Length: 265
Image (tube, rainbow, N blue to C red):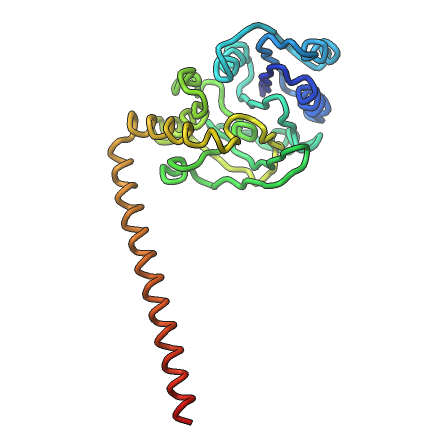
């Protein structure tokens, strides 16, 4: 089995069905499909049963949150690579998996592709990810789990998702994988999925809590780098401020000189 696609869901029946259909219609079929439902009380179970022919394994039971559900999916997965596609996220077209896997063999730990972002079923943004991962990029950003194929055995090295975190566990996994465990990485210039931006990490009211979780992880694992980058940001900010002041002064002097020449004429 080449790939395990894992979808987690809780009380999101209509979006779950969209996700299932986007997976079921793929032209490339060398994957299993796992759904982890958190004991939904809406029509999610009916949706799953209605589409059971497209699902390899599913379970509906209470869990301890998003990352606990994702870890349950990983525990069931048999594929060489994993793709986390939550309820509401959809694959871009019927042929995206074929574009990635049918013509090329990979050995990288992380295969990152690009992602569209949507709200109310309308695409409003898109994210292109870098061709190489650096601490500087990951310190303030991340690649998308909806568009990144993760080698299953990388979790044996880095660990599962940290269930003590509410928002930043997938980011923590990626920064540890790349910057602590030197995971290999490749970026493919292909849009894989449309990410539903109605989740917790897209809500502005959660941004301060997300920042605190990120800072906690950085202080725990990369304290020296964090100070270096804080110093760098401070110097960069001062440099930009000085450059703006110099440009403004140069503009004022140019205008003053031009006006003096015109008056002399």
